[in-house]
Every structure is written in structure tokens, then in C-alpha cells.
Length: 246
Ligand code: OAD
Image (cartoon, rainbow, N blue to C red; front, side):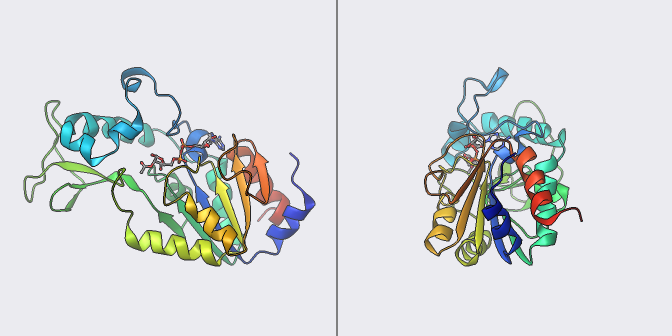
């Protein structure tokens, strides 16, 4: 794998780094990315049409079942070498912030600690009305389970299209992007706001931007360095080349 000496030197000298990840980072764990075509039962739906308050109002059971299916898929997979390389990076860089759009919890499972989950977490379930979190619910095949406090419908604690991101997580992510020396954008198509603007905010403040992706994105032409390929291969290689074994 060809990583320029200039990039290795830059990373070696970096004390403040922010990294943004998207679904591509979990692809090698066996999870489908958002904009991959779906298969089977869900092939007829676009994720964008299921991940919204309108969809939940229109057909709560359909949306609940789609998330239940994804929750099971997440439970069956493990972090991959890309997730672990980011844990290693956190240990090596004095100030490191990992910002993820993923709701699968794999970064935390791998051991990342300085982590901001911008779009929530699929394993958390809360009431759509009174916001009470719950870990236990009865699941019949007919209807969406109800909140034990108020009787409202339960939903996953994830951000849907048209909803606001958790304010504390977003503010911390913006601050990390604006103040870092190097910003890594990894496995994200960069089309969903406000996460997509973080790399540009970093760039505008003078940070060097590095993109790691299997495909070109709207960020590619602006990035200072582009590493084209799979993050589960590139990240371990990069960490090894820059910081060596721990
Ligand atoms: P996408 O599915 O839009 O993009 C995945 C990106 O990962 C693409 O650019 C792929 O080229 C790249 N990719 C795929 N496999 C890869 C691999 N092994 N290594 C590196 N790159 C790879 O997913 P996101 O950008 O995460 O939001 O989508 C952003 C948001 O849109 C999601 O968080 C979700 C969705 O709607 C909400 O639900 C609010």
C-alpha cells in the first residue's frame, strides 16, 4: 500500500486529530452500508424512506421491524481491524476525538473511548412520546411495543431525517473539527448534513484533511490526501507505518 512519506510525517507530528467515520468502516464487519442496495425483505424500501418521523407516523410497525432486523444484524457482528486501528490511534495521539455517524456501537465495542455518536445508538430504545429509555419490551408480531410509563410507542434512540442531532455530541464534534490539526474522513459518503460539513469546517480552519474511502466522494477533490480502498486494510497499515507496534 502506497502512503506518502509526507503524510506519515504529518501524522507522526500531529498532537490534535479528529476522525469522522461512516457506514463504510463497519462494512468489513459484515454490515450493509446505508447507500448499498438492500436485499431480501427490505429490497423494496430505501433506508431514507424508513428513517424518518413521517415514516414512523405512517407505519410504525414497518419502521420498528426494520430497526429490529438491523439490531439483530448488529448483534451478530464484531469490530474489524479498522475499528481496532482507531483505538490504537486514540492511544498514540495526545488529543484524539472519534466522531461517528454509525449507530452500531462497534467503535465502543472495539474499545474507543473519546467517541461522539452523532446519530445515536440502535441498541438503545426509548419512548417516542415521553423519552423514557427502556431495556425490556414485549415483542408481539402485531404491533409496536408500548412505553411502560405513558403507553406511547417505543422507537430506537437514533436520529431520523428531519430530526436534530444530540446537541452536546454535535457541539463537541464541531469543536473537535475546528481545532484539530488533521481531520480523517473514513468510510462515509459525505452527503448527510451536518456531519458532512465537519471535514470542510476543519479544512477552512487550516487542518489537513485525509480521506479514506473505497469510492470518490464530494470531499475527495478538497482533501489533502486520499487513500483509496478498504478502511479495514488501510487503517491498520497506516497506524503501523506511523506509530509502529504498541
Ligand atoms: P453511506 O452508505 O452513505 O456511505 C458509505 C461510504 O463508505 C461510501 O462512500 C462507500 O464508498 C464507503 N465504503 C464502503 N465500504 C468501505 C470500506 N470497506 N472501506 C472504506 N470505505 C468504504 O454511509 P454514511 O456516509 O455513513 O444517517 O451515511 C451517512 C448517514 O446517512 C448515516 O449515518 C445515516 C444515513 O442516512 C441517519 O440515519 C440519520
